[in-house]
Image (tube, rainbow, N blue to C red; front, side, top):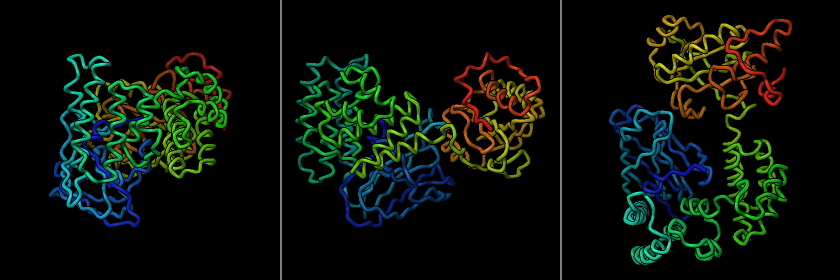
Length: 489
């Protein structure tokens, strides 16, 4: 499960409020002036699926101002394209943020999320200050007790130092009378003890056994993940792992629940269900098992759970796992041709489509486009091909096809940040293959070469059963298991 180390230094939280209150989030992001800024709320802190609350364009002076209604303290995500910043917002509080520019190493890499730590000024509460200070204190301990080879001291020594340091932490923060901060620190210290080689038995008894899940606490999510790591991984050290793997493969949630319930650390029903949902989510992300089986298991759990939190996490997990999965509708987007005319990809329904997303036109883009040219010559009558840039100018895009004799569609993405997010573009070039209903054929889609030509060849056989196949890249023999990659008409 994805976790963001930098979140720790940028995030804060507080207690629930019964009624929605207006919360002011304002500040300056001068480096990003003119760009769109969004305020998001996380639906849960295990999948990190978020929903937008409000958006606006940052002024030319860099200023922004949001008034949002929230009913409880929540982790708020501030998004400027792929730049992310965080704070926990207390209902009715006023915040002033200064969003810094990204580090030099991150500034020119739009294909990944970049986390920056804003300066945060609060009108009344000090939760930002307290939790940031706690994180700095704990990080300082690991810096002080790590060798030059980045290893902690021996187990006995590190536990001794950690126990002494924990007493200092308790004393330092004893006067902070805030229920949420106390809960945050409770589970943060659970993670601290796990990291400093305390026994799982001690950590479970001290931090989990007599405490309910704190679903809205980032510290709980981190501690839970660390404590239960590997419980439902195939071939793990647990005695029930083989039987558990069999129940997952068969899609039997009841037997899965039965096997897990035999463990002493899973006697609390809330923890057992949370482990099942988060563990299945991770197995689904890794594609350890067939995705439909994982989706069906999550369906069974969410239809039987009495917990709204488990239901939310299950829904978020399914939504994320199904995003860009084969058979799902490809996200729509606007693009311009080389003379500036605007189109939508949805206008091309009825065609098989092979899309190349690239950033800059460079040697690697040219190499792969040269292979696309071969595919175009063989299959262009049946498969439409597009090369879309996220950053090149239209002038530059007009030059590329003529100079290199590329005779397919070149264009520029209208909203690059949104497309990068919608298509989860983590590297360039990246490819997508869509069927005639604009559904994703396979994910990830292979780059131009023998593998994708096999998929093209299946389409050719369907459309031209009596013609010789125009192989250009000499693909190997098509295996029976690969025949399902292209939907049959």
